[in-house]
Amino acid sequence: MSTPVSVPTTAAVPKVNRVRVAVTAPDPISRAGVLGQLRRHPEIELCGDSGPATVALLVEDALDETALARLRRTVRSEGARAVLVTGALREHELIDVIECGVKAVVWRREATAQRLVQAVLTAAGGGGDLPADLLGQLIGQVRRMHRGGADEPGFFSGFTQRETDVVRLVAEGFDTSEIALKLSYSERTVKNVMYGLTTRLHLRNRAHVVAYALREGYI
Image (cartoon, rainbow, N blue to C red; front, side, top):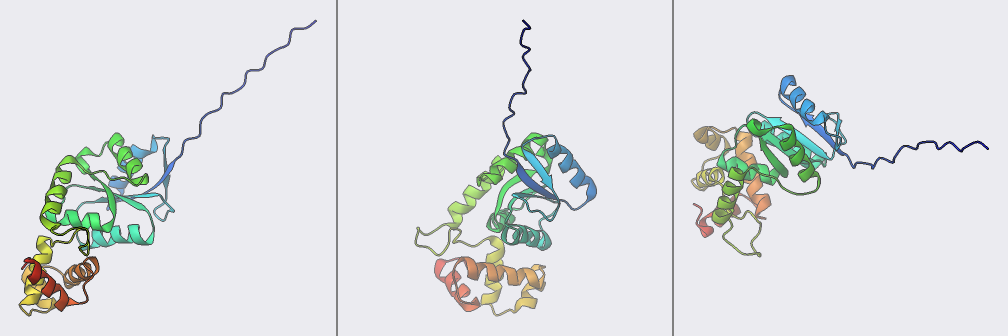
């Protein structure tokens, strides 16, 4: 009688839930570097710039109005959760980034593969991930800005320094072009500041913004 031959079977490999990530950067070298960091990790699936992606990882050298517009478009239009890799953020820019919907920020000097993957997975899960120094800044800003309780018109119910500067000049009677010239901003930036205030605080117009700022002691 012949002895039965056992045929080895391949063990089932557990399926990994992969996060689809789109990477945009200001230059091809930066983009290739980020792609190279992420490509080695099985939980990451890289896709084209157009998506669809669960997470959009954006590398920005400077956070100007163009960069902020890209962030807003990514979060609101494309529906992706955003991870920002940048060299620096000024204090007033931090609130802009948070309000754009960015879930995680990574300093370029700390952008190792492990750090990038951690930020992407956290953002994909709906969480937030900020460097310790930025987290301290955010807490400080919230303490200064959040003067009311839960019935206030918005979570960030205070004014950033940029918003204060713009509204003060509005209160003094200057128009958009004059304010832009005085503060060395573009007219688009001034309009965006006022639009952001009316939207965030549920105010009707410029006069309402000025009245609110005066009543709350911001100007």
